[in-house]
Length: 595
Image (cartoon, rainbow, N blue to C red; front, top):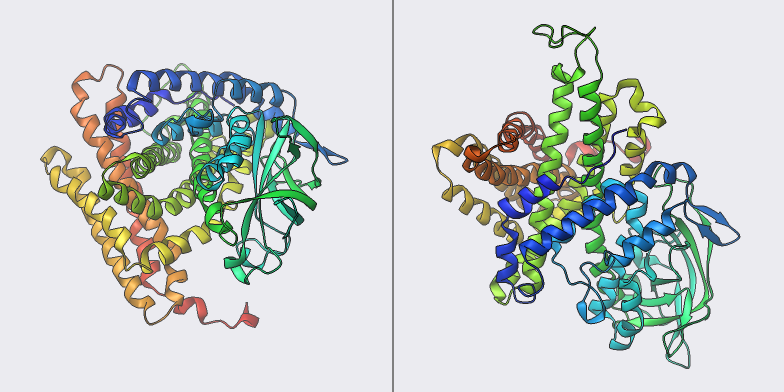
């Protein structure tokens, strides 16, 4: 298994050359005095070092040792505690956090790059700070000043960590039927009672306190999701002077034995009248938690990119070194018994698919990050609204498409290794196991597709989609140079197809509500490939303009990868679109007892 190296050259290309992030930051109040290109580059360099040198070396050993549960206590694998302390001391946990409470206040366009590096280095490790950052976001957005002052500084510092407690044994997606109860106490707090499952980082030894964000219902709450409230429930109560008090009535009943991410503690958490504090308004908890969940959905999508990059790096190194058979056109290395497998068409197909989709994903995550920055910091209301609309539309695509592609890429990487890819010591089988969960948690990818198709497209008559389509059309109109025609024309065709598909599903859904769910997964993938075509056209435009400065062949390789995407991968939208147009009828021909 090749050692993971942060892909800084490509990250800098996307961030600085394609999206010109520094110009964006300088145009946004709240960021102009916080970050500039030089500072960002230094941070990327440091992130590359800590992920490659400190976190990545713990990946395989962490998988083999796993998190250990003993009588309610959870121990993380050897080295995790020290690495987490180093990571926290560098300010990475609070990287995008509110500076008023000790965060660094960095933009999301930079944050997505750091997240990708951490996931690429070590999936299990990455989840601990990711959940903490997400819970900080929800607290900062919805908590009282007292709650923020009490919890955020230590959470940003990495001294305390955070969790998200939603799922219960009988309910996952349908949170309206949760049974966890919150009963008011005389001192203004609430007694929280219930069981939550699948809680990432619910118990561990990395921090001195764990701050749980828990969904629960008051005794007189309305039925369904409108009756859910959100509470902060610390592992240890916090005294008035900020010191830790007595242990709260919250405990870890067990941890799950999982297919992958074995070093990440996935806990069953029991709340037995634990003291909790209301976040936001009563019965408005789901809205507050979705602030965190939307952040986590993008983060988990980036897990797919990180796994793809790690798998690709190993697969390329192996394909250059492993010799088997001769090239179809004759010996490439006649002095050896055989040629390296990178000469063979099928191996190149897999490697180029991984490269094209990983680099397309990186560009798209940066694009979504730029919309998050715009929606948060722009002073123009119209610009801010456009960013908000695009974030709403694109978040389910980022979560689901990044992770669907992540699994496909990791399987390609494993396949390049042949039998060795199935063997533990080479590392590819761990990536396949680790990335698989990303399609399941934080809302399964089927739920993400339903969200995109139903709530984000059909429900508003395609209004969010039009914002995206209009932007792409403007780009197409501004880039009619003949030298770019090989990229611009197929992008235009893909967008026209997506527009027609969107209109067809909206129209059909007025007659048959099953059309929304029947179209959703394939529609999301059509959207994903079309969005990547937009990203690749933007990257190709920059690469084309810089060919004369191409000392190391980077831009030539970028153009070659763009051509592969447009000629070999973008045509996938044709079969996917045919599936959408087939409608819902084929799904409902069988009765339930005929399955």
